[in-house]
Length: 389
Image (cartoon, rainbow, N blue to C red; front, side):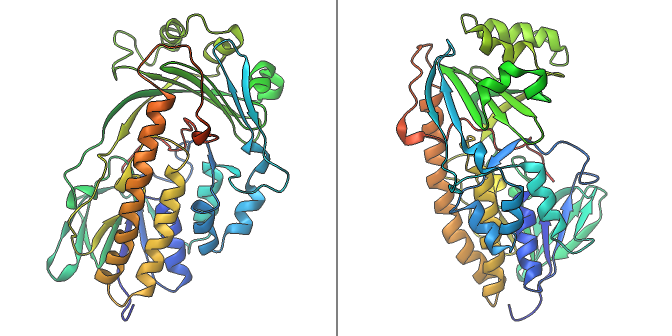
């Protein structure tokens, strides 16, 4: 880059933060605008499997791979698949030296990225309202307090309901026909030994027809449960989602006939249930170039959770930063970045759509088959609650 560009990133998620980190490594200043008021204002979601050729590659580019490895849990690559009778159908464990997709809590990875940035990089409590293109290839970022700032490049890393995306595309997320209901277990090895036996050291999935139950072990004895089913978005009609016992009763009716050990996932959770309908962007999702504005991660390619969303966001962020550093103009940088990112996103989104159809068919068949081509990538809810940072 011949002159120092003014760069803004909307959203302090993983993709935006790794982009900021790589830019700063090369002396390019950047400001990240985040709606959350501080790094600990809310839970950052569950565990992530970070893949060797995508997420790990991005962390290597950012110079953070060794720190990531020290925090990660290679043993959590273990996978168990059950049928609805709690019969173990398949059990895969990674070898001792296998680092192809070690797990890490999303919050731990985000904290690692935040700690790698220069102080003051992230402006907490700064919500982005919109972005508009300006003459000469620049862009104006509008804040919710009606202030505005101009930049040479605005990067939308603000998730499913991006406020940057409308500057490039009219696409809006639509319901994918599947809902995930989240539940939690703490100190699982002591307080919930049955859950601990089911999940092992990593992830388990029990499935039958259009329903599944997923458990994921996080760090410090915490397990997240995901109750997944195909059906209408208003499956909870007539039930107050804040009424834990009413939600529990509604869910139990959906899983009648399942083994008692699996039903304990619905009965014994700590705290309430969190409703997470699954949304996706059209495939392919592309746009006509608008100078000075681009997207990464879920803002660009929101797809069914298939263990790749966070990994693609990390790779997008690192590659976009490298493109900015390696080209003399923002226009050239975006040409290079989008020419690779958009086709890759389309390919992964098509795969994720097919995986969702295979794993959550619109049938009540009791067939728990899990195609070898999808193993171990399953209905892993690796994306945190969608928000516009």
